[in-house]
Image (cartoon, rainbow, N blue to C red; front, side, top):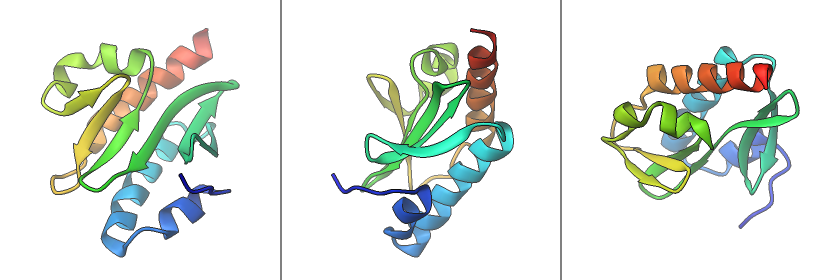
Length: 117
């Protein structure tokens, strides 16, 4: 695992087509939760709100991994069921459109949760 200090560094290491996908996910998160703090955690872009983890994402060979644990996945289980999933993660294939609306709703749900806990 490489070490990155910023999300900009993380995104810059990728080819242009993947950079565009990563920026789309990043902008979606930042527009939905503008008060969230952006940082690198576990070697990937991460966001926290009220000092609590919000969401993470990472790029892989064939997909973008999105992590909204613990409740972001269970709350949207039906909509996420068409995507390959791992424990606490969902895989959005890079050869298909990124589900921006779904990501917005997950981030909004997690942000609300972090504000009320």
